[in-house]
Length: 469
Image (cartoon, rainbow, N blue to C red; front, side):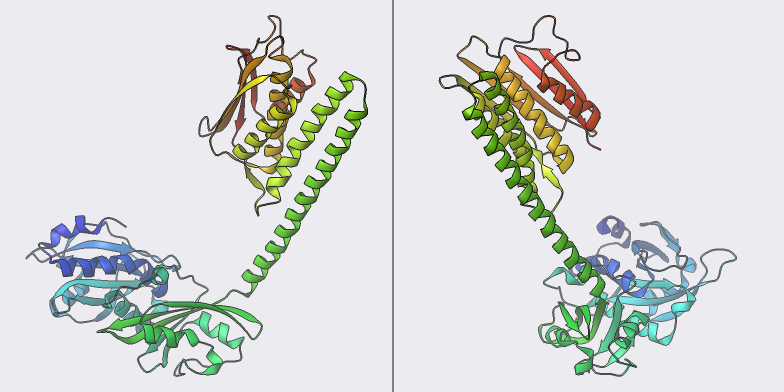
């Protein structure tokens, strides 16, 4: 919806109270369209001329009938919109028809005046809808919606502005608490509760289960609640229409959310089961890592110990991913935290006593599915292990860095680098026998469909690009 005050300049000078009233109507037009299944438009007079300006308009999100649309801010002659002009001139509520396209059935149209508290007519509202929704009952609904649009109170919560859907039951209630309108969806819901005709019933009847209506009437504020009754789960909302501090009408919305809540419970159970599985996988992987550590301590071969230590780190890297998944509901992970933990874990377990290591870690939030997160975890593990094992031969200090960024709208970029001795002059990553490099190549190019670069830049520099999709 366009900015209201830009279009209102054509209306001439308006007082602060008049502007606030029109802004209030503008803010509630979406709700009005949802409830009425109509196209709702707000018009003002252009200065002293016999012309109108369209300053706000919404199209019903649930109506299936054709709807004509105007250009916001456009000026039209009074003869092009006679019903609206007559309402502006006389202050009358007018019912009629409006042609919207040559050869098409006319749309039903109902117009209402917009008055200030002192009775001055400053605008007109029009509701346009197909002929199938034009019975006396629907006209009562339109009147109630109009009263809500111009009601003289500001709700203290946002319930009044939430969308209303086509499957929602809608009831309109008068000041005596009698139901004066009920749509087909409401009738269908109450038939499931063995309640027949709704019109004329009072909302305090026990069979209607509308206790929140009393609270809305007393407080003058919208209310919402959910309750289980007759094997159904009902979501209820009440919006009072307040004039001069008194509730003169009320709109009630009832929705059958039984299946929705059932599915939500099933998803919660499924989520809990999945989290428990991740927790058990993590525990099992940590148990395997502990067994390998025991085996490494018993081995007298330095090569075997080194191989087992590398295997332990690989297992713990995957275990960290499952640990994160066991603590959340979704199968996606912010891998920045996983990368940080693995980065620190590998350095702490691989660096020999007495070696001074400087760590540099930079990571933006990067969210990946669990399978991609596992691959990234292994890549970090392999590259950091390689840097420690081969990058600082003959040295007593060094620096290892990791940088994870959203490189572009289509890819992420992982960099792992050191200030060590660098790669040999004849190094070829496609022919190397290094298991770690082979693992990284396979994960990047086969599993993730990304790119892997390895080059000298003040030490060894690895760059991995991962597509976002």
